[in-house]
Length: 89
Image (cartoon, rainbow, N blue to C red; front, side):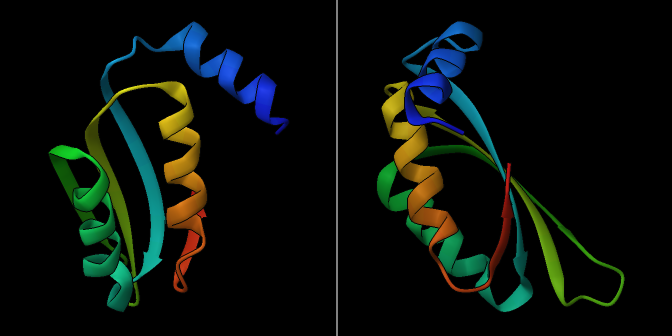
């Protein structure tokens, strides 16, 4: 998605600063790394982990306090670049 359009949509549908929920599907061995990276950048309000049946993958839903829409996009880019992160939503 085009960067400017993504910023406009975030600003239209979310209030900043405030809570934002990130969703990721990661390999199970990547969960702690993603959690650490999020905690380094933001205050984590909650984080839910749902493992796949075989335990190879984990669905993460992390609600964090963010300052602005730009920070959301930077976080998506940063976390998506981690090896073992399969999907970000």
